Length: 262
Image (cartoon, rainbow, N blue to C red; front, side, top):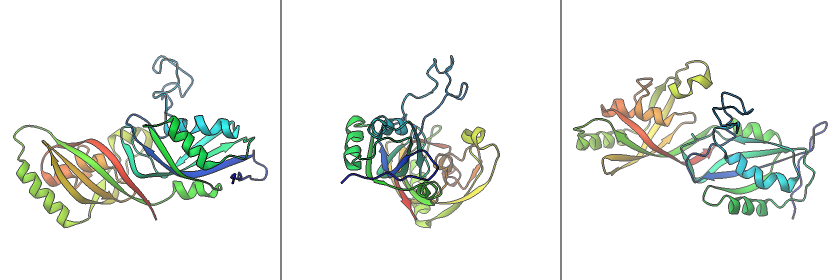
């Protein structure tokens, strides 16, 4: 059975569908990553392309969906976003894909998902596609989602006492959830505009050794900055792993294992 688009009086004909995406490679942003210098117009910094990264999750979906719907424009709305170097695994992250000036309506969304996954094999997967209305955008973007992560932690310096680190990790795990006080991370300060201290809970579910690194499975409150929760971000996150373990450390690799909508 073909799916029918949702139309709104006084607006260009539009179609919205929701689903979940899994991101299987690093270096792929969720949405179009325009060059900050030229804002997409093309310059020396981006070699005239207008973007710093050629593809995004949005692009990979649009290249298959837009011709089928004969649509002119699209927007991508995610339930949060992962960093460009972070995988999105598990069941995937909820999203809404919105198209306007749609000319074709009789599109099978199950077939569309298969086509997207075939064209982007090994890069992204989309599942559970179904039509939705415009109010779903706000619900997805404002959703309060607990998240689960897998973080590879590497330690700085020499003469690291790994036995002591493992004992402290055991104690952290046994202690259950604790509350972090996180200032706006230095790496996103240019986008946020001001420094705000947020309190967010974090929980260590498991840890295991991987050579001189430690792999942590974490559960966190919506809006927790995991990389900074590990490194402390030069002390801007209080009660970070670096502080609790009393050793300098960094998040060398991060995967999202789950996004859990309320």
